[in-house]
Structures are given as structure tokens and as C-alpha cells.
Amino acid sequence: MTTLLPKSTLPYLAIIAANFGLATVPICVRLAQGEHMPSLTIATLRLLLAAVLLAPYILSRHRDELRSLTRKEMALIGIAGFSSAMFFILYFNALEYTSVLISSVFTSTAPLWVALLEVVVLKGVLRRNLWIGLVLVLLGSALFAISGSGAAVTLGNNPVLGGAMSLIAAVASGAYLIAGRVVRRRLSALVFLWLMLLVAVTVALIFSLLTGTTLTGYGVQGYLWVVVMTLGAQIVAQSSISYSLAHLSPTFVSISTQVSIILSTIVALLLFQEVPQPLQILASLVMLAGVFRVVYTPRPSVQTARA
Image 1 (cartoon, rainbow, N blue to C red):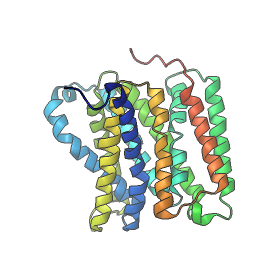
Image 2 (cartoon, rainbow, N blue to C red):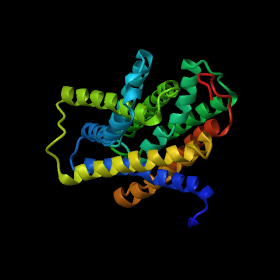
Image 3 (cartoon, one colour):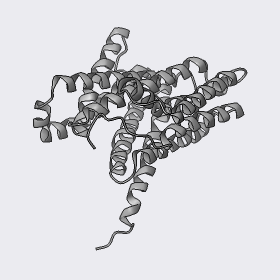
């Protein structure tokens, strides 16, 4: 029996699916916020739902792996989980203050911070392409700051704060990936993801408790958008990325998934009338060029694990 599509095309179709899945995140967050659901509630529910969805499979198939965890691995999972919680909390809150375009572009700089953290934490070498990428990202950030004058409707009510929160979220995402890279030497991907989610949920719940933010009492539509976002980002995007990584280079996958920024910006234009200003478009292109300059140019991997 023959398949309708050549097997060689499936990884590329997975990349397309991943981009659509990732593009749902900022849109669903904005729609849930429109239902008067706090950003912290959205982030907490997103993490909680993902952890619950994975729990039956992990507990039934990976108990031996869970029992074999070392203290170092648990510490790294703790760092990854805390960083992941900070990413979601900061990124989702940023969408209250600025546009989908700005928040998405700033968080898309995560590969750059991964490279920088490799240098600082894993003692990698700071290569020329990294310096160029960093300069481009900083230049793009400056252009965004300049574009804030006289464009409050498009940029949001506090684009500087929103951009700063998104940028810190990108750094947190980098910390999560670095910790994950080390612990994934022995631990399987889904076990690491689930344990990280448990830590992230705990952190988010603590923040909710301290701030008096509740998880219940909101409209049905708000919860629906959280479910759609979780299914899109967790089930569709992450599974598609995992599949494509078995057939395509991580660099290609990393660059290709940046298309989600364009998709989410187009939807934001249609749903929220977030029309980009010319200087915003230029700043976005400069920042993305910085990220691409880093991830597209091959560089020796830091010797932290065996291939």
C-alpha cells in the first residue's frame, strides 16, 4: 500500500503544523485576556493542563526512569521548570502591554540568549556571528523604542514595559533550554518535559497564591482559549517539532519555526487591528536577522554530552 505523500515530505509538513501551533499562543492569550482572565491565570492553567495531559502516559510507561533520577538531574529540572514558569508569566503579561508583533519578535530572540548562555554556563566560544547577531538584536530593540512615540494604539499602552518583559521571557527560555540540554543526556524528552511542567506549575501556583489570583470564576470562552492554546502549542507544535528533529537539522527547525511570528502577526492584524508601523516592521526584520545570523551559521557544539 502506497502513501499519498512521499515520506521525505512529512518532516516539512510537520514544520508547517508546528508553526501554526506556535502561532496560536499569543492570539489565544489575547482572546482569553479579552474574557477578563488574568495573565497569571492563563499561564498557570496552560502549564497545569499540559502536565495533566502527559501524566497518564508518563506514569504508566516511564516509572523506572522516574525512580532513577539523580540529585543533579532534579536540580537542573528545577532550574528548567522555574525558567519555564517565568517565561510564560512574563510573556503572557507582556501581551497586556504591547502588540503581538512586538512581544513575538522579542521572545523570538531566545536562540541568541541560548548561544550567550552556552558561552557563560557551558564555557563555549563567543564566535563572530554571535557578536553580529547580538548587535543586530540590540539595534532592533532601539528601533522599537524609537517607534513608540505617537503610535500608542498600535504598540499597546506600554510598549517599553511589554518589550522588556518579552525580552526577559526570551532569556528565561534560554535558561530552560540550557538546563534541558544538560539533563537530556540521559533523560527522555517526554519525562523531562513532564517533570519540568510540574515544577513550573508549582511556581505559577505560588505566584497565584501570593498575588491572590484565582483559577476559577471566569467565562467559559476564556477557558476554551486556554485549551486551544495548550493543544496547539503542546500537542501540535511540540510533537511536530520532535518529529522533524529526527529528520532535519536543529538549525533548520529553529529558523523555520520563526514563521509563526508572521502568522500570529497576520491574525493579530485581522482580529485586533494591530497595524504595524513602518519602523516596527524594520525593527522586526533587524532583530530577526540577528537571530538568523546566530542560528544559521554553523558553529561547533559545546562539548557537554556525547552525540
